[in-house]
Structures are given as structure tokens and as C-alpha cells.
Image: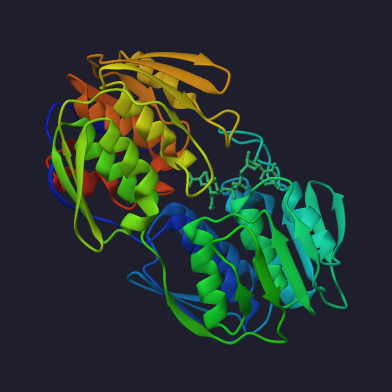
Length: 417
Ligand code: EPU
């Protein structure tokens, strides 16, 4: 298993480019199942979760051609409408094939995801939504079996709580359903809007993506399309925090500033000078940091996927920051590891109380999930001495060459096998 060895103390300087969004690319790849024509997607990041999704699609019957950041998918027919446990257990987003498979072939068999390091993460809302659209659902032997032999039919779906991939799954199911579907309390994340844009390019009729109510008029057939994935806002945000935490001056290029407003606002309140040199660039120049409280929320609020990184930043800020995690019930695994490096963090239920500013020291730490690993990398960049981060396969799930990008900005980081 690979490890990162990081020696802290260098202020990061210079440009770091953003890749395409992992969480946008995953549903876009699944959406290619909805048509028998080729779909070409640009700016697909080279991360492990994307490779897992491609493997899944190949098993289902897609031909997948990868050429740099471009992926061409062609699914003349569905060979096996199934997402096996072996893949779902490594990537929960595999459940994104549920909606498209039922819509295209009237049948899907998807393993139920088990527990997860950040919370229970059930998919009951995906299932509820599909039932509203007329799918018959049967649960047995650890699998969900969904059937709609006569096709899905449009319906009103009121989500009990906001779910990102649940909204995406239902969107993909509804585009081929008969009649009108209205999704209430839908997720407003940019990744949902990006998926809707791709589906519209494929011939779907969708209105309201990016708001809480999405209306879909089902069509009989979708065609092939070409689409470019949006920039990864979580990756970009992680690099802005890397600049801020090291007292550096980092320019993040190829990003979408409109997707980063909640983070930029917190950075500015805490003393970081953030400017926007052009339409797709943000620059974070650090002054003295002071603590600012933060609560995670659905978009356009502060992303839970940046909470761990923000916590690392607050260990270096003067004062006390209260961080409240409202999306996932167990997303504070990084706190214990940060504490091993010298951070002063008290956990009280869904609240973390971070007392800064503490001098961190290098230590052996373990990455527990994707974003927790990113926070440990950030902490290591300012820690005295050497930090060894174990299980970096978590970080490889969602960050493309993070060590190369950070090293180019002056970080002392290397991967050891
Ligand atoms: N939830 C349910 N039932 C459901 C679905 C969700 O109770 O059927 C609950 C979840 O347990 C959670 C909350 O609703 O407490 C929100 O979960 P959501 O469904 O929105 O999360 P997700 O769609 O599984 C996506 C991202 C996550 C990101 C969350 C929240 C992808 C592939 N994953 O997950 O990304 O944290 O939205 O923004 O888009 C990551 O990239 O590190 C990551 C975990």
C-alpha cells in the first residue's frame, strides 16, 4: 500500500491546475447507459473511482475507450444489468447505474452498499423515488432488484431529505419515463446541473436543474452527445486551503469560482486574501489566520467534502472555531489523526471545537476516507518534521496526482510504495 511522506514548512507558491469533477464525471459516465449511441465525455479525471465506474460499465455492456481526459462510451445493448457487491463495496456511487438501467432495460440488480467510514449512507431515497416512477423493488441476498417491464411512468417525487446522487439517479430514470416527473426538494449541486446539461444534449427535456424543483418530460429515446465535465470544486478548494494553511500564495487555475463562493467567503473572513484574476482562476494569499465557525450544508452552503480540509486550516488559526457537520453523522475521523499531530480538537456529537493556533508536528497517521486524507496532507504541509500518511489509496479515489501538483507549488511530498 502506498504512503505519502511529507516534510512540512514550505509556503506553497505558484499555479495549481484543477481537473474535471469526479462527482460530476461519475453520473455522466452512468448516463451513457441511457442510449445505444456513442457518448463522448471530456475532462474526465484519472482517479480510482472513475476507473471503478468504467469497469462496472464494461461489465454491464459498454465499450469504453479512454484517450487522455476524453472517454468515449458506447452501449449498443445492456448485457448484464447488474452492479455486483465487489464493486459497490469499493465505491458507493455504483448505485448511480440503478436509474439508467431500469430506464433503459426495465431491470436492474444492484448490491446494497454496506456501512461507510463517514456515515450510514443508505440508498432508501433512490429506491423510494424509483417506486414512485412505477418500478417494482425487491430486496434479497444483499441486492436491490428493480423491475419495470412496461417502462417507468412519470410521477411526483418528494425527497424527504436532499440527496445528491439520489437526485441524479432519479433524473436519469425520469428522462425515459412516460410523461412528466417532478422532483421536489432536489439537490442543487453544480454536479446535478452538469448531469442535466449532458442529458439535455442527449435529447432529454429537463427544466429547473440547479433549483429545488426539477421537472422532466420523458422522451422515447436519447441520442449520443459530446460533453465537457465541470471543474472539480472540491479539488480546487483543497488547493486554495493548501495555499492559505502554508502562509503561501497559490493560484488555482481551470476552476469555476461561482462553485466556490461558500469556501471563499470563509477564507476571506479568516484573513486570507482571495482574488479572482480571471473567469476561471482564484488566488489565495495568506495573512494571519483567525478562527471562523463553519456549518456544512447542501449547495450553495459550505460543502461537507471540504469540512475536513477546513478543520486542518482552523488548527492554524488564532482562536476557537466551531465546526458543525450536518450532512454525514460520522465525518470527523480526521480529528483524531490531526490530534496525533498536535491539534487541539474536541468532538461533541456533530460538532468539533478546534482551538488554534497550534504548532503541529509530523507523525505517522492513517487516512480513513478520501477527504479526511486530504486534510492530513494539508496538516502535514505545515507540521514540523516528517509526516507519513498510510492508506493513501483513499486519496487516489478522488485526487489526480495530488502529490505532483503540490510538489510543483513547492511542497516536499513524495509517494513511497
Ligand atoms: N441519505 C439517505 N438516504 C438516501 C440517500 C442519502 O438517508 O437514500 C442521506 C445520507 O446518508 C447523508 C445525506 O442523505 O446523510 C446526504 O447524502 P447524499 O445522498 O447527498 O450523498 P451522496 O449522493 O451519497 C454525494 C457525493 C459525496 C458528498 C455528498 C454530499 C458523489 C459520488 N458523492 O454523495 O462525495 O459528500 O454527495 O455532498 O457525488 C466525496 O467526494 O468525498 C464524497 C463523499
